[in-house]
Length: 281
Image (cartoon, rainbow, N blue to C red; front, side):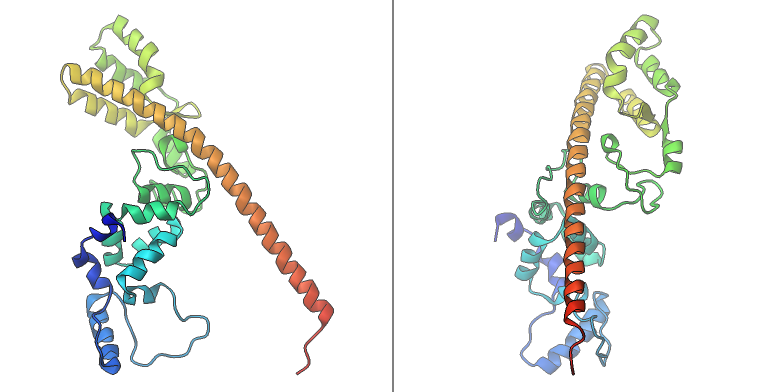
């Protein structure tokens, strides 16, 4: 077990597994009452036999910790994030920075996927890549990713959040120039395309407000340093926008080919079954 896995707070993950006992009948009753009280699992007194519904995520809290840790590393990042959303204890464990190793191993399961940029955590990266919802209103089935903003927005939210009107941006630069027309023109030439991110010629309105607020909160040389930080940040955003756009296109091509192969395989199986005819009883 790696050092960072061993460093995880066992008080957090201890609640994910019931304590071992020797009497299995006592353990069954204890597991049922303890899990129900903790809110982790709810076990009925008599289990009905439901075909196809046994197993699943509900049984994971009863697994030994070393098994859980092993499983986490083989899960798809999408499934790992879904698991983190199932219970408070799983969320506490998996959203901790000390669980970064699990996310890294899960990410490595996806061929060719670049590591996340420094401004995105592993869970946020997984959410961006594999969960098609609007990052503003949570509307579902939003498949277009605005990579430079590291976000997905529905059409309605794009209208609210993005604009081609550069007046607000010019106002910010005017304040940065302290009302000096010559310096303002210089800033527009040097910084307009370097400290503001764009998508199809549109700027992100909340970002314009944020830049002004953060710049105004600084003094002297800190203001210039902040503008340089913004320039470096925008460069990385653009690089990742290109990188992830290319990866996504290749990823979708591979997934499409896999689905086509699966369809052909199933069709072939059906044809073989038809030729063989019904089995005699």
